[in-house]
Image 1 (cartoon, helix red, strand yellow):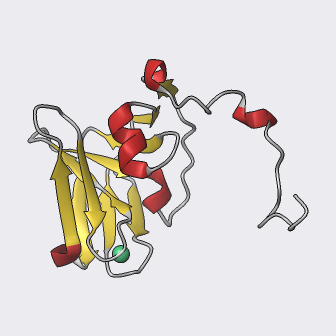
Image 2: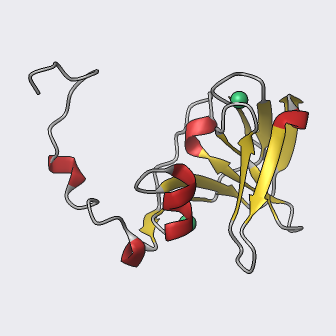
Length: 138
Ligand SMILES: [Zn+2]
Ligand SMILES: [Zn+2]
């Protein structure tokens, strides 16, 4: 059974559809993903058998492959948003969860490469929570 998923970049230039079931959902803390996202970890869904279709803006999509590694990351050349990346020639697709506009019903399977996690990435669930931008006194 194929499951349709749809997403887009922040500026809207690029939109895509992915047909295929997500088998794995990993939060990757490796140094490449931290640098590439500018955050504590990447949040990537993996569909081992999937069809990726660019609905619009394919000409804006760039793929960065880090030499001598398996690390690859697609992004919009206009706004830099993370976009789906084909997994080599296997027919699979890696989809950044934040790029999806359709609901993500799968829960993450694991934090991975936690040996490489950021110095400040510790007990983040205990950091104060603000429903929106914090007030000036915070
Ligand atoms: Zn964009
Ligand atoms: Zn990683």
